[in-house]
Image (spheres, rainbow, N blue to C red):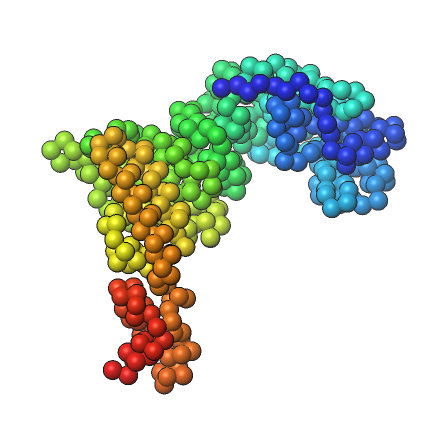
Amino acid sequence: MSMQIQDSIFQLPADVQEIIHVLEDAGYEAFAVGGCVRDVLLGRTPSDWDITTSALPEQVKALFPRTVDTGIAHGTVTVLMKKEGYEVTTYRIDGLYLDGRHPSEVLFTPELREDLRRRDFTINAMAYSPRTGLVDLYHGIEDLEKGIIRCVGIAEERFSEDALRILRAIRFAAQLGFEIESETRLAAQKLAGNLQKISAERIRTELVKLLISPYPELLADAYEMGLTAVFLPEFDAMMQTEQHNPHHCYSVGMHTIRAIQEIRPDPVLRIAMLLHDIAKPLTKTTVDGVDHFKGHVPAGSELAVKILRRLKFDNDTIARVKRLILYHDSRPAAAKPVLRRLMCKAGPDLFPDLFEVMRADLLAQSLYRREEKVAHNQQLYVVYEEILRDNECVSLKDLAVSGRDLIAAGMKPGPELGKVLQQLLDDVVETPEHNTREYLLNTLSR
């Protein structure tokens, strides 16, 4: 699964070249470093550019008119060039990682070698400057060519310093289509339990990057290596739950992975697929050799909320994922009245995503009646588009009258007014031609 390395000459952005040039002219060393170098070698466009230098933070600040002390204690100064900011960090050696998360102290060093040695993986431990060229002391190029994720130095030491690197190894493998080198993999398995020391926010960030990567199926590797047991034990339960049912040919966990692969790499959609069957292990029953999972949808929507809160997701993501799970197993008839009722209940904003979730779910099932299911899903979408084309009302905001209209007609503000609006909406959802101001106001006087 390795990617071919590009032989093209480095083309640093003008701002990065300028920062390096200013530092070098002042007598210091300076290099683009880390992920940006890796990405250029792979022919990818870096999302950001980091610069490392022998200059101390105060010396960096003295050379540039606009800087921000973004991480001064760790040697990082953000240099502002026009509207962009670039992190410039002094070569450093990290002290002992007593808590498995943060170095107890940071020591500055004049040696680039020492700075590169503290980094996580060989492919992230390369540096480049136009004057010096590529500095690759730990065989990062070789590992890029082989498609390997390998720790710099001794893997157990790197993972003991910061346990999040264990999950980052899987994430980088999934983003790049690489394999994890055997010693690195063994060390990750051995120290997987240390992930419990890592904050939920940092775990969440790496999990999302893994899910939206080109190879989200490496979530199975995270399970096999014991990583998910620490931060997502519910997924382990899914991997261990078989589905003896005509509609399925995988365990709940492998069905989940297949479903993630079948949907576009949008964070909310892939999180929804990760959790859409999360309660199946809790609701499984077997009758005459056939497994059933009655009630897994409402139970799953509530369990998903607990998991996402545990991982510190934002409220909007939580609310949207909950609704997608709650309605993902809906099987409405491909008829306008039925679909209008479901749109009204679930919320019309949900539907474009819901169709994708429903389709990914069925494509991850067995071949049993698959063509029929896919055809029905497509027909549902056709009916949905007809509802949109005909501007049929499925929400209060599209109702021909508002609360103000009802008050003007003599109703008093309060709970009763809301009930009346809902009754009018229910009427219009059943009979779209009733959505006129005249008809609805006349209904009030009957």
